[in-house]
Image (tube, rainbow, N blue to C red):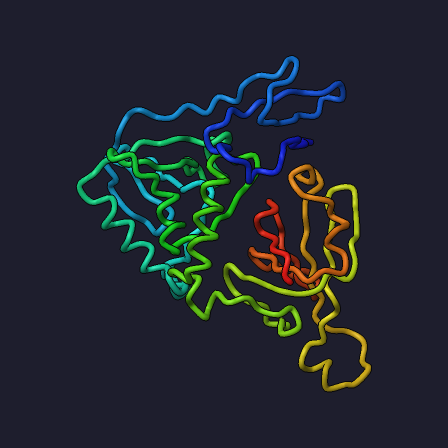
Length: 286
């Protein structure tokens, strides 16, 4: 199991920092932004070849002239219409912006630690010939939200700073009612599609060998609410994988606090969960 041992990533200059990898006596792999004995530098070479973009698939996915499909690292844009699924709010806007930005220019890639995803797409940050960081500009325009998947940590600080500014200015998705934070108390058995923001109070913290669960105050579904005192309801918990705990502050510090979590809902056996991969997906509320 990989254990990531790094400082929290909102450090100045993280985007340009080296990432070091080493193994301990038990064979566990560690990463850090500081060199230690016997560590090797993770090979993340910026690309210096430029390519034309053949197709803009959506706001965060393109196809190059060599037929490689590129998925942008560190961000997520709303979905466009796909088969029988309607477009998410802001999905078409992000795609149009990207088409305009990439017209009459070429791009180079900075490929991630993990070169491809499970769909065979190349994972990368894109830069134009004018040195424009496309991933970052999408976030700055409010057309994408930051979605950090460890160990892909390059440019995390820059992306999060741009997101904070866009959110405060209510740009793009941050000004749309479809992406307003939803109280956990209003979550129903129907759930909520797509990327979601939920706000609630952490009532319990449960630990297993593989994960830590932030359990939120119980929520009654509309049908259960009609039966005063009835058992049951819509349960919700945020899950953090143990291998990434070193990225987070003291998990127990969330107990009893009202927080916002950001991600995608999963429903299993009548309850909802959300996988939290990085501390940037948790916001403490006053």
